[in-house]
Length: 319
Image (cartoon, rainbow, N blue to C red; front, side):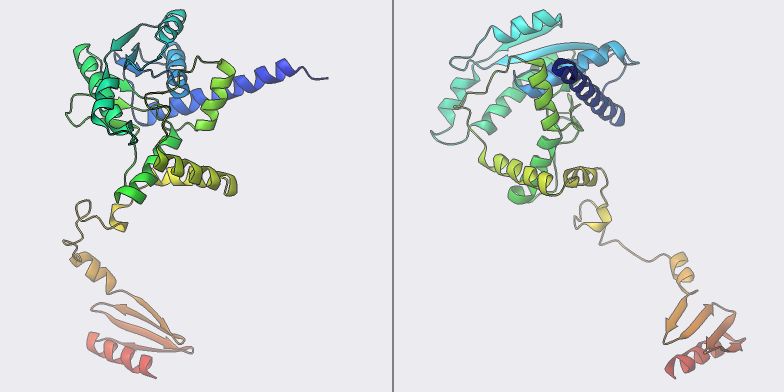
């Protein structure tokens, strides 16, 4: 009889290895972390940021480059927020950390009318505070816990509701050009993160600024993608691959590709002059300046003059 504990341990090891591999690939593909970097891991108390910190701490020990880590949490002064949880957890890991105390809760509640979604303003205030801390503390990279599902949800949100073809890039230079944001979980599936969080038993802190308010549009995208994933295995992988394989000339953005300036090159025109034409069993090879060889039903004709060849070709094709 197999040992359930041993089986569980084996599953955990395979899952942890898989996640470390996907994070390592994303970091390498986008050159997210370089030698001497000081990486600020933004820790919210959710499964994604816990997983991100966990894997980066492992990579810090095994990666061929040396970099610093600091875990940073923004205490937004939400009523009932368990202030002791993160400091105790981070202290147990032995990772450098800092808790920023900023009452963004009161600002959001004062500005946003009752019943409206607070996520937009909350995220902007949070982002501004974290950017400011990064600049003041010589942080070179800001690591966020967005995973592949977040990226795909954002992609379809922008298509369906924003009229834009964009998502969350794995690596981003902030608008003010002062901060580089990285998303090492860009290749990682949310369901794998959920499994790891269950194995590791992270001390999850729910976002209750607005009673765990759901963003209904994003939730609709999540439901749609999950349905596709069940009905068409591999579809989400293909969609994400399309974000890495963009053909600007096959879209319609005049700012991205110069459609108005398209012209035929002289070389292309000359190459086009050598053509193979097939119609009703008639084949013609046009050789510029050297005449044509024309064959129909096994009968060949040759003309040495360019004009004669052209006429011969027309005569044969017209039969």
